[in-house]
Each structure stands twice: as C-alpha cells, then as structure tokens.
Length: 146
Image 1 (cartoon, rainbow, N blue to C red):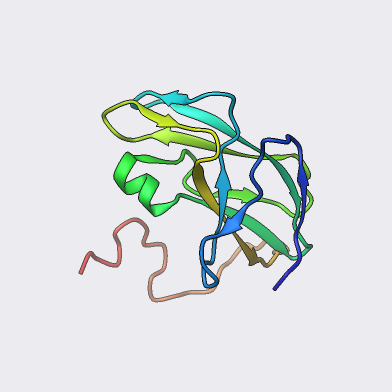
Image 2 (cartoon, helix red, strand yellow):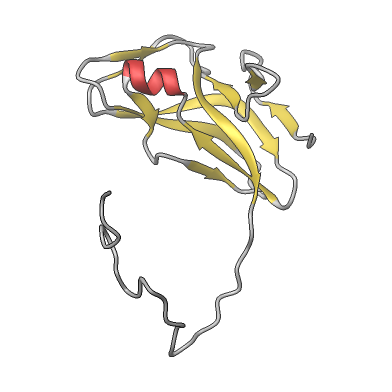
C-alpha cells in the first residue's frame, strides 16, 4: 500500500475513504455550505476541501461513482479526471447532470472516487515513417462491431 499525504483545507472536509478493503477507488466527498442544485445539462465544480501529495510515478484518476451515475445521472464532466503527482491544489470534481431532472448534492456526500495508478511517460521522437500493422490507419469502427 502506498502512502499518500493529505492536507485538510477546510475543517468541514471529509478525508477520502475506501468503502471496503478491496475497493480500488477511495471516495471523494462534497464540501459545500448548503445543498448544490445541478440542473439538467448543467456542470458544477464541487469542492472537496482536501489536497493530496501523490507519490512520483503515480497519478490519481477521478472516476464516477457507479450508483451516482446510473441512478442520478451525475458523473465527472471530463469522464476521467487526471491528477498529476506534482499538483498540490485542492481536489475538485466537475460534476455534470446527464439526467432529465434537477439533482441535489449535499455536504459530505460521496461524489466521485480516486484511483491511484502508475503511468509511463513517453519520449516523443519525430519519424517520417511508422511500422506497418494489419490495422494500418483504420480508425473509428474499422475493426467492426461484432
């Protein structure tokens, strides 16, 4: 298990928690003074009141919580947020309301989950040619649907 330092920026903030011992994602909690009303099609930046120090070689990926997305239509607007290991600001989640009705987010509610994963940084090298593959330049839908 990796150690991740956390800084509480507001006394009302809830520290991220894993729901079970086998959870891959730690829940992130809404920090707000009152209820946040998010209209259909609207996007709202929700504060968490915490910042974290992610170990070098890892990144934090912010994903939707399955229940919040499927039952209420609330999910991160950018689908997956990426938190780099050198970022020290507050963790915030931009929630988008995909449902047909207004949704309420309350203080202390679980709004997303953060998963820590290693990544590989690439060195880009200019090239006039790329190796041939069976797929070639086939793009969207080129491999079929079944």
